[in-house]
Length: 307
Image 1 (tube, rainbow, N blue to C red):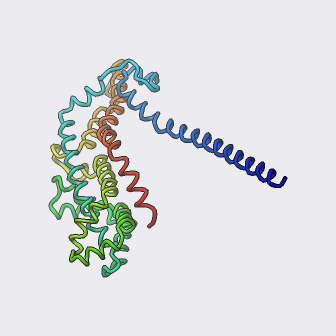
Image 2: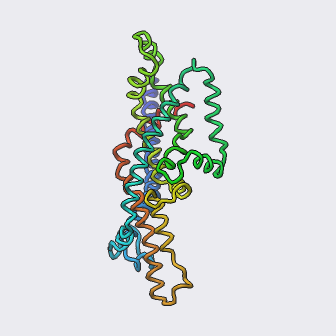
Image 3: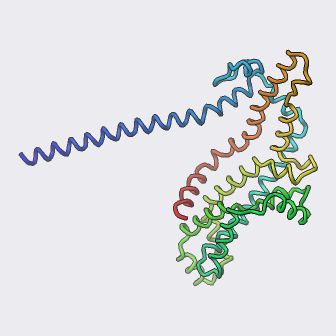
């Protein structure tokens, strides 16, 4: 009799656990579905609005799919001859800047993982100090000017080459995923720190390197303020700065247009132009992201477990 009661109790517990799991899965799926809709809908709306007619956008007819599809906004964007030079410039800044930044980050992160490094905590504190305090815009500009970087491509690469948060994440990753025993074995074999860094640390750090490339690349691609400050030659402008100028030039001054129909058409084109500019600016990284997503997830999960 006691055994029967125990078996019935175990069955009830299993049934309740299964029921709780189903309820949790249902609620979790509902929350995730809402989150996907909140994230995906603005993207779909921007994409649809960029391909829709000005009248449809101004009338609020666009929801998910394009209304009266047209390429007018994209023709207006790519009619500017600087768009292609902006793409080339931004591509160069992203490739050169990301490579330089990741190399600098790795070279700074690895020594900070070595406990025997003299002044390890002092160097770490100095790096962290720069996260909280900076000299400001004017002193930074004066430093860049004195270095002779004004109106050069290096002005968009060197000043912001090292991200302290990225340095901390990279240091944490190396510290957690490269055992001290490997270094001891390498030392017994006669290998120095430089050889160990090149042959062991860098190959084993491919996930965090991919994450840093993505972080630095997105930051450089989306940056326009540095170009606005340091560049005077329009041939060196990054894409974001060119798109900003196009958007400003297409802003309508109501007092300068007397014809109501012309004003409405110009305002509609300016509105649709915003969405086309967003698509043009984000399309490259939206296309690249799926190929680096696995490295991004793995690197961030492992690199952020401990401080």
